[in-house]
Length: 170
Length: 289
View 1 (cartoon, each protein chain N blue to C red):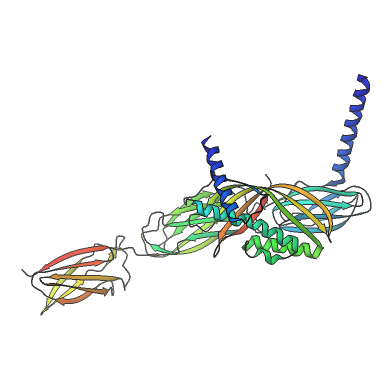
View 2 (tube, chains in turn cyan, green; view 1 turned 90 degrees about the horizontal axis):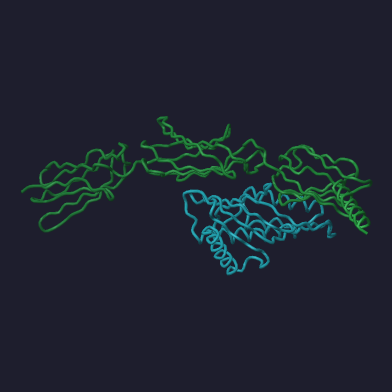
């Protein structure tokens, strides 16, 4: 019961921070759980809020990149392997004459690991989103998706960037 | 009446079941494949259709001949993730999902080791975190055992094992008692990654000086300055000599040279001379009456 209360409290705090930041679409529901967090380094509230804010922004950037066929939109929010893979996929869809829309509806975020030197945060996101596929502007399909993403964030100059973002079979 | 209803619902159930099977048969996709492996997709019907495999990590589009299998060679889909498979044909679209899982064998490690330089003998002073990736740079989620080894220049090794959780493992280790470059290695099977940690002497330990008269002056010099593990404290480390005498005080900062700090100060009768380096205090000498 205490854990549930803590979870709700944590989610409420984060939702408030996120809404106050005004960067996330109002449609996206977000819950946050830190009860599974491992590692010797404590995750301060400010760090947690910043990581969530930046991660959710990365979904917006991803959507824009795929919607507009502009891999450059990934630069602010992604780094390393995640950026390379997403940019490659944007190029592939451009060559194939496709574009896609990723509209996130809900994120259920569990923090897993904050590395001891503070250089990475790993989390699980059980995300609900819609994928809409267009072939040369002809709507092909709109598919609701529920997928579990494993995400690794690393700190950059002024924000957390997504280094790994990989869906796993639940 | 009862018989009619039974037949009606039975027929409806049969029609729905057959319809569902027809829908299922329209596109057969493996539910899961290992990244980079070959697979095939089977469609029903005749004529041409377009097959889309769409995920944020990879996008493929193929024109397919309906009713025949479409083969994807090894290496076609290599990014682990959750994909939507869509078959578009004249009669409409059919959608399936495909999960691509990482290759189980590790190929590379992302190793975060800190700090790059620290004093010897520090409890839990060295930390390492590792993420395990396959040959396609997919994070391997399945639990694995990672070893962390810290070896000193003399060959002494500290070793710890850690299990990965969602592809990540970490450790904390004490810095050793010997100064010099230590190798910090993370290893999963045949794959390893190495960081170099420079261990430097700690604060001076047992700082001792002695005084020898040299005319009107005192020749003050320390014993060789060592840390508590016996490592020589680096040359250039500042040692402070302070002389309190009736009516005044004088202080001299001297850098260590060849492990020793040395200075000449006036030999005031009744003076008290102390030595320190940083926060470490050494002995005191009282000179004269």
